[in-house]
Image (tube, rainbow, N blue to C red; front, side, top):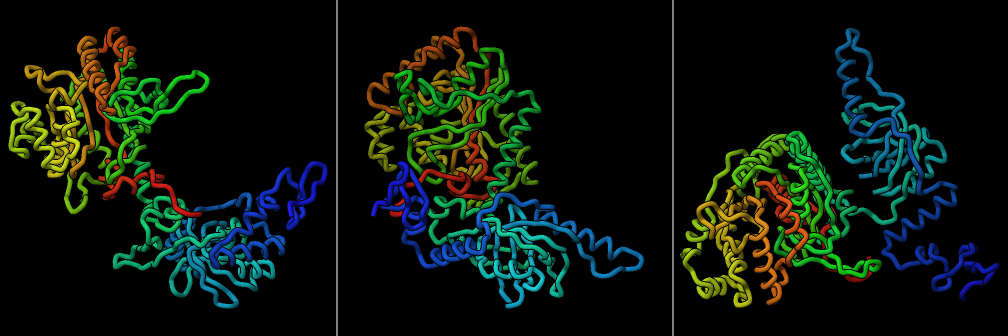
Length: 547
């Protein structure tokens, strides 16, 4: 049956409402309600229908809280201290007229009453629901509550005989009926009094894909992302206090550059031209230095069409900064000072345990030349080794594509394979081969090397930095060399950016700059060994089957 047309609208047979079109003979809401679902979900849909029969709105509009849960708990404990300190001692204190809201985390029905715990973004509080106090409407609502539902309660805060701070609910409001059971896990109280939650997710990919549920049931996950937010805030505060100007550069670019990476591309229909998601902010930020904005930074998303592993996600957050009249040694000092200060401010320490290693981010950091570290690990001097000798070594390390790589790519791959994984750090590795560094100035007195450094910590790169190349002719030749590699099939090589060279012709003062992987810094400071654990919604393979 396709429904009955009425004034160009179609009547949905199950609900009797009129719509411009139907799906499989019913409206979208009826189709949604009739989908095949597991029994626990069907039971919740049945409660949803019962709530509507009772005239209860299952998806509320607002609730006027007087306190967040943590605030209510703290205020009551302060009241207890004042009461205990009073000369007459007083009776058992109560905090009246409190209105709090949260998600139901636990529910224990005792017949005539029930105890539940509700939680909000950073607090947890017990509530006591009594049928005779809530009346018939409240009692009926109690029978239709489930774990995960959002409720609001009003009443007095007191301490039970068992010693737990509790809200005696005098009013109960359903704010949102959840139709899918949250994956709550087991809970236990550790010896130090901390409440430890063991996740109800058995599949790690489900946690990333359903981050909303992961955050709802795992306080530790919420804490990681709170710390992430504080790290970003403190990076901004630190730079702002030193005269850096936060700017925004294009994400959608007509020509990508600033790094060796394969881009994502799209098409601008009105302009009829190919566009790219940026792989780095560098070339636009240095244009601003040319324009006399001599200290600039940007914290934003970059996009690289590359593989996914524990330290790589195609969409990631980068802090890039550039400041005039500086070189890479100035940037070294800024980097180690800033990161140490941020760690101290956010975490209260510069020492962290990461994957079984202890790392101290306090300045100064150890420094080592790139070629010395390479020679020690590879057993050959990169200045003297020929291309074929390097390719043979790359093949030994498992690079089946060694014959297709340029010399710079081989050196980079070998360093990553042989050296980075051995470094706990933080270590400043400086003086990279010039062929690996198309945007960096040559090292003074050693033009085969670049005034460039990377910070390596716990086996991964955290920072990449240069004395920025400001000679237009030299930059043109570097771009041309990259273009030749690109024409030969290297999809990560840069193209010639004529506008950027034109900007250099207007005069880029001596400039130092760096790129900091914000996600990796958060990994380090929170002890997370996968970048997916510090990105709210990481890139994943498509989900198989219906959600």
